Amino acid sequence: MSDPNIPFDNSYAKLPERFYFKQKPAQVPAPGLIKINEDLARSLGIDSNWLGSPEGTAVLAGNQIPAGAEPLAQAYAGHQFGGWSPQLGDGRAILLGEVVDTAGVRRDIQLKGSGQTAFSRRGDGKAALGPVLREYILSEAMYALGVPTTRALAAVITGETVLRQDGPLAGAIFSRVAASHIRVGTFQYFYAQNDADAVRELADYTIARHYPEALDEEEPYLHFFKLAVEAQADLIAHWMSLGFIHGVMNTDNTAISGETIDYGPCAFMDVFHPQCVFSSIDSGARYAWGNQPNIGVWNLSRFAETLVSLVSEDSAVAIEKLEKELAGFSKRFSDQYLSRFLAKFALPPENDGALIKSALGLLAECEVDFTLFFRRLTMVAGGQDRTVVEELFDHKAKFGKWFNQWKVEAAPADRLDAMKAANPVLIPRNHRVEQAIQSGYAGDFSLFHRLNEALQHPFKEREEFADLESPPSPEEVVRETFCGT
Image (tube, rainbow, N blue to C red; front, side):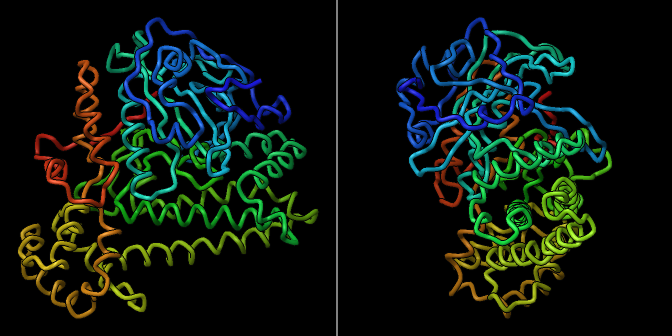
């Protein structure tokens, strides 16, 4: 029977036991609440007052298992930076269980940093405070920006110390809510073991949970793949329109639901460049801003491999059908990308996008801040003088030539609302996130709370948060972001 405080309704735990290991979170010495997401809690049918109580904090820290929870670590594999790992799994996360939210959508509740599991591979299974604060800020900012994403339910400190390359750090646990934690790597795990029954059962489960419309199709598994392709194309186009770089697009970090998942060395770029990279471990720029669509196709190709036997008994026929659907990624992505950037520039739907390409080239050449450029272009569209955007460019003549062409092609008077809705005033800038993290390690969470408050409404102009719009000064620039493990 479920705890009335968390109305669990678990389904993944009913799958065969080879899909997971049952695992309780580790006990922590002194749990303390940093923040709970009250709105999200209410949407999950959870009493936010209870969640913020000592009893609720004990649950969020893993010290207390609520009735109805069936804690487990999920099995999955994956390609990491192109290299194959046959077994990864939840090495530092425990799925507590699932709830059906007030909109009727099934959601996972997972604790990240909750101790060792069968998949920890010599790791301690813990999380340091910094990555917890980062994921809370970034995932909630992405939600407010309208991007499909996992979400932050809570962050707690544990009262213990974890050891990382940069020394001992305060420990913390992040409570993540997701449409599910099923990944491309989940399918790969069973495919690599030639476990056709598990692949089929996982596909049936995933279709029922995420893409039930595929059940009405003549070829449900093929249609399932098509819908997953579309979801990834839409997601990556949305990322790129906001200057977001995931940083670690491994197949185990590619959610079949189409949500952004695993905010490790991710970042919103400041100065624009198509090969912009922040991740400290992406030395080859595999996951650079401009490479993300190609990586999306590569990851989906790995997903397609796992579905061949489900699509047709004749593998050649199945591969041909899957490749045809995969080929649809390019047009879907291009259409979504163009549509989002047309809105950012207040250009009409029939525009061919050449002006967009030339603008991005000019941003890269002049090393202009991506978000600030669109913010100020929107201000000009709203009636301010062109100098507010012109001053961002070293090459005034080149900017002037582009700007004059933009005035010819754009229709800001007719499309200003769409332009404002596409160009945020605020993003979680790397230097502000880093400042919040460092302050958090010093015991001060005020900037963390302020950032979260400001980023709830990223498209609104609010004077009290105007300072958060500014790009970093030279000494504030964050050049690398790091994985939390």
